[in-house]
Length: 81
Length: 538
Picture 1 (spheres, rainbow over the protein chains, first blue to last red):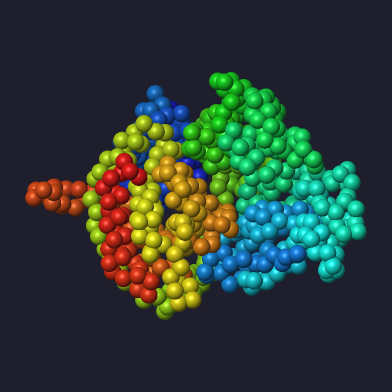
Picture 2: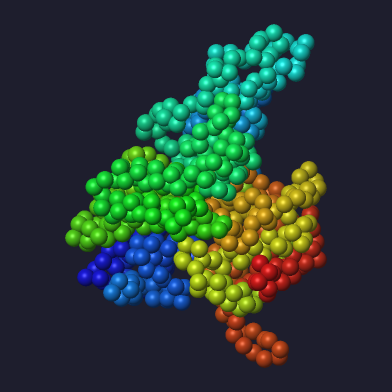
C-alpha cells in the first residue's frame, strides 16, 4: 500500500516539476533526472515537494536513493511505514 | 507631465506588446509602481512607472506592438502645475478624471484645492479586479497586484510593515485619504493574531468540504504566540489559495514565509490530497488538473492551483521569437566584442563540505545548491575587480556601482533567458539562494519583472553540476564579462606533493578586451577561487 502511494505521489510531483514529461512512459530502472531532464534546481524542488507532501524529511545524503523511479518508490515507501 | 515610454528590457529587445494595463486614466501612479504588463520576444514582464503622478491618458492599447521608446501613456505630475506660475498649462489635467489622489494635491493657481472628501480612496480591490476582462490572459500572478498599500503608505512604512509581517491591505489608515502611518502598522502588528484568525476564517469557509485543507486551515489559529512571520504577499496568496501558512516552510530572512513558499505548499497540498484519494482515482483528479484554456493566471478563484502553467517556451511561436532574439544579440556580441578567455580549475572540496554540513540541518526548501556558491563567488570577485563589472558604452568602460548579477536560465523545452538579481552584493548567501530559486521559477513561468530584465552588470552561465567540463561563453552586450561555470568533476589533485581526488570545477571567464586585459581577468579568477576556498566567508 505504501509503495503504491509513494509511486502516486512521485508521479504527481514529477508532473509538477516537469509538466511535459510522461511519467508512465519513463524507464523505472534508469536515472529519473536524466530522463525527465531535471537540473539541480528542478531536483531540489522535487525533493521539497516530496518532503512536504509526505511529511517526511529527505536529507541530502539520501538523494542517491531517488536516482531511479524504482529506488525512489522503495525509499519513499519505507519512509511512510 | 511626462510621457511613459516602452522601456528596453534588455539589449535584445526592439519591440514590445502591451498585454495589460494595470492602471486606467485618472489613477494615481507612483514611481516604481507596476503599471502594465509587456510581452517581449522572451517573456511577459511587468513594467514600472518612472515617475509619480496621475495617469492622464493611455496612448497604446492592449495587444498593440510598438518599438522601444514609443510613448505608451501620459503621466501628469502631481502638484507640478502649482510651481509653473506664468506658464499656461498646455495640456490641462482632466479634472473630473483626476480621481483619487495619492497625497493632498497642492491647489493649482486659481483653482482651489479639492475638498478632502473628493479625494476618494484608491479603488477597492474588487473594482480593480473587475477591470480585468474575464478570460484575458494574465501572465504574471503578481501583475494584478498593484496593491492599494503602494498608494496608501510611504516606502518606509511599507518596509516596516513587511518587516513586521503586516499586510497593509488589511490596515485601516488613520491619515488623510486613508494614508497608513507608522503607528497604524505597529497597532496592526500588535493585533496580528486577529489578522491571522481572520485569514483562517476565510480559508475555512472557502474550503468547507475539503477535509485535508479544512483541517489544516483550522490549525492556523494554533500558531504559538499567535503570529507567524510572512510577507504580505505570502499572506495574501495563502488566503487566496486556502493554504495554511504554518504548513509552508519559510525560506525568507528569519524563516519568514515568502510567496514562493506558499506556492510550493499549495502544490504539495494538492499532491498530498491526490495521494489520499489514492491511485484508484484517475491520475489527474480534479484537484490536479492543469490550468485549461491557455490561461496562465493562477489563483483566480480556484482555491488550489496545482499544475504549473505550461512553460511559455513550449509555444512554437515564442520559441522561434526567442531564438531570433538570442541570434540577434549573440551575433552582435560576436561582431562587436573582442572576446578573450582565461580559465582556472578550482578545488571545490572545502566549499562542498561546508554546503553539505549546512544542508544537513535544513529542510529541502532551504538548502543551498552549489550553483549559489558560484553566484556568490562572482559577486565577491566583481566587487574585488570592478573593471569587469559594468558596461561598454560609447567607446568607454562605465563601471557599475553595484553588482547586478545576470543569471543565464535555460527554459524547459529550449531557450535561454538571462534575468538579473539587482544589487546581489547586498544579499547573503541564503538570501541569494532564495532569490535564485524564485528567479529561475519565474523565468520559466514567464513572470519576470522589469527590473530583473534590464541591465545586469555581469552574468554567470552554467550548464549544471553534471554538465560539460568547461563553458566558454559569449558576453551579453553591453556587459564586459561573463563567467562560465563547468560541471563539478572529480579529478586527481595534488596537495602538498601528494596526489588525491577532489571535486573540482573549471571557471572560464570571457572578457571584453576593449575594457580589460588578461591581468585584470586573472585577478578576477584569483578572487573567485579564494572565495570558494574560504566558504565560511561566503
